[in-house]
Image 1 (cartoon, rainbow, N blue to C red):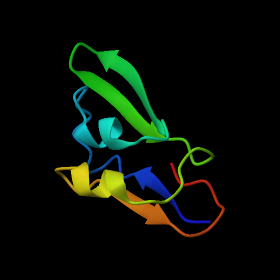
Image 2 (spheres, rainbow, N blue to C red):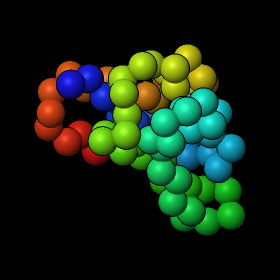
Image 3 (cartoon, one colour):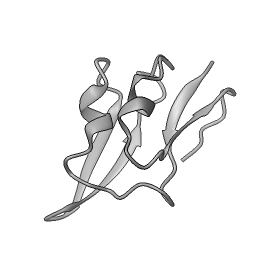
Image 4 (cartoon, one colour):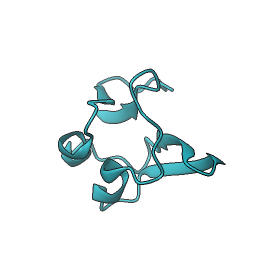
Length: 72
């Protein structure tokens, strides 16, 4: 099943991530690492693979995985 994941090498880790706000399924997890730094990940069990978040990510850090393997 297709699901999204965040490429940590591209993501700017902003607490104001517009892609995380675009997900109506609540698949994004934001874990605070500092005042203006968060670790952003996507719960593959909640992600439907709709692709809306990719249109809102200003850095193109959200990618898709078509397998059932966990990509972190």
